[in-house]
Amino acid sequence: MDSFLKIIDNWKDIILDIRARCSNILTEMDKKKAIDDTEPGPAPTRAVDRFGFIKQEQSSSPDGLPKGRSIHEREREERRIRKWRKMIGVGGNDWKHYVRRNPHVVKRRIRKGIPDCLRGLVWQLISGSRDLLLMNPGVYETLVIYETSASELEIIRDISRTFPSHIFFQQRHGPGQRSLYNILKAYSVYDRDVGYVQGMGFLAALLLLYMSEEDAFWLLVALLKGAVHAPMEGLYQAGLPLVQQYLSQFEKLVMEHMPKLGQHFVEEMINPSMYASQWFITVFSYSFPFHLTLRVWDAFLYEGIKVVFQVGLSLLRFCHDDLVKLPFEKLLHALRNFPEEATDPDVLLPIAFTFKVSSRLEELQKEYQKGPERSSETSSSRRHQPLISKTMSRQGR
Image (cartoon, rainbow, N blue to C red; front, side, top):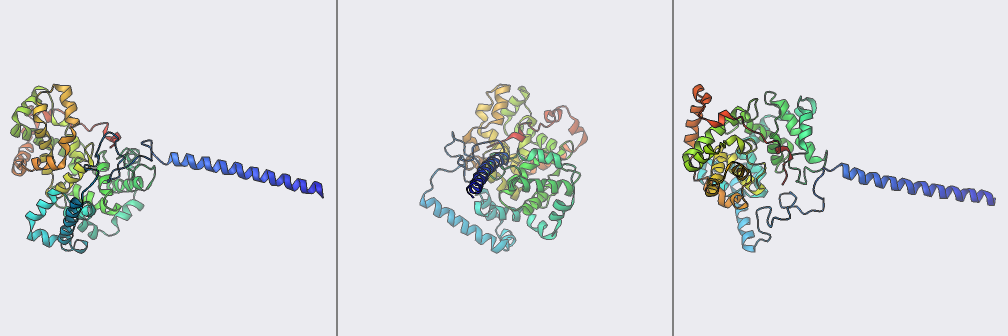
């Protein structure tokens, strides 16, 4: 009997030892899984700004706002939100009526910035994407679930490189990356002529931060197909024809509004394809402070592509006196790395809106579309193909 009890005790010890070993193995597996599920990047304990981006230690206010807000500032923001809610109405029902009655008020308030808590809804209203969603029930779900895309592998490769320092997109195969994949895959099927092009991911990712997958998809469709403004799909078609046109127009606007700087660009052999392609392809969602990007998008969605031209011109105007003194390499670096004070939306956008470019853009578009003009050797933007930076996919904030 004693020997039997000893055997039982030995078995208990063996079982406890096995359980301990299994527990250790499972713990190690969980640790490994936690590591595998996140992309290499900043430690998860790092603080994030109010938009969800990892804070840069050297920046005192990475989200474009002071660390503390006074009671007066909070009360003013609450009043702004109440005004906007009144403009929009319940679920956006009053928006179109208010815009018809008070177009100048709407434009002024949009240029001052849409309250962040209402931004997603307002973007859908001003872009026309809400109407597209209502007219196409079930279409997005069909594109995601039942269709296949020739661009799927390319999309998967690029997803982890889009806003890698934002907490929503950091986890490999996490909800952010899955949603971004779904939108890009769905669009590549929806418009097979365009398919998927690197750079589209930044637009989709930005939209995803303010609305659902389906809402973001239809806003992307509204932009590229032209629900309200001119279609932008030419930015991503083979040969990037719309990028070519925009760069040609921008080059002429620089020469007209800032002739000294324009001449300096000619002398240093700098053309817009070397620094401005990303501005148009991603609508300033790449490499610019996020608080500036949002303000640009507020106005861009309401007023159209002219805003990108205006903001580009204002960046050059702000830095004009420094840029005209720089040689080629330093000039190119400066055009890709604007100082922090130049990207303050409260400073930059008022300058941007002083440039009246609408009618001139139409004239330049007609000139560009004439065959002889497009083949002219006098346009340096035509001599140089637009450059989509190879570092775009590695962009971080």
